[in-house]
Length: 214
Image (cartoon, rainbow, N blue to C red; front, side):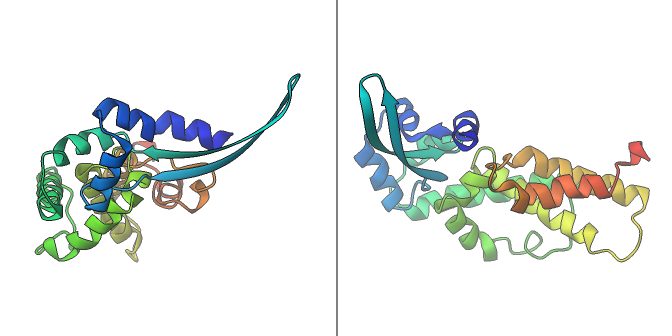
């Protein structure tokens, strides 16, 4: 199946996560229940039917897939006591990345990333714990989440302009698109047409050629 090939290519299985971290299933579940570790990005329930010389065989299997950065995050939170400490780490890394982006010229008037960033970090944290950012960013780590959110805001600001974009604006738009491309997953085959990658990367590149292509 194309979906299973995609997941094995871009994600790691729960078994791999447990083996490399040397955690038990119970210990991983406890970290998730304590809101220190995100849930799996994908959960598959498989009903298998096999037919061979020896006859028919049926089997059931449940698979969980985590983002590539899950092992890195596990290494951080395994030393922490509670959710408050984990959120502090997440918040610090998220805000540090936003500040890096500003020094690199990624600017926006949106108050979500200017001023009091703390006002929306609680919702970002919840999306992170629910496994949503594990699904739509390459690593599932705070830095990729910050890159993705900043890029989406900047792209939408340019798309909302009511005039033809200048060459300078086109350059800035494509820088934001490239940032989003670097942070985002390919998305599973059944998700791609509805994904942010389709809307804000593929469609934008098709509609607005890069200045070098003009």
